Image (tube, rainbow, N blue to C red):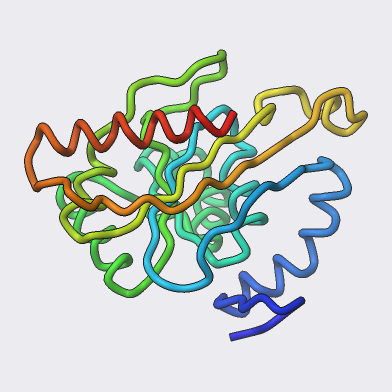
Length: 202
């Protein structure tokens, strides 16, 4: 456990050291603006829109806690180096019921997991419907969900470097699944609610 600027950073050494060494450079190059923070302790699900490859490192840099990313199996097939890199920085291969058990295990350990409920990147404006898998985890295990909206991560790197566009990430307040039952209808209703909360952060 390390403490910087009054904030507790519950991170593995490799995550903490990498964060300390590269966060200032990332912020300098991208000019990212951050609004809000997540709770310092306890299990959480971060539910975010997904526009580009910048989204995972952006959340990793600005959450101020070590987070884990639920990732599709095909993401690990690009190259051996890429697979090693994303595993090192907490991409967790999720597939079928085994993947679900992995997510549950992490949450029971008090971890923060990042889910992109749209299920894929959407480079255009707007958002796809949210997959109720996120709702299943939240409702079944009473895990708060933090809605997140990322703006302009799909713009060109040059436009970010030249400050032609502003990269922004906004964290909403944690939402507990109180009052929702473990039913298909409520899983879908909670997914719709979280999607609305994410959209309201624009």
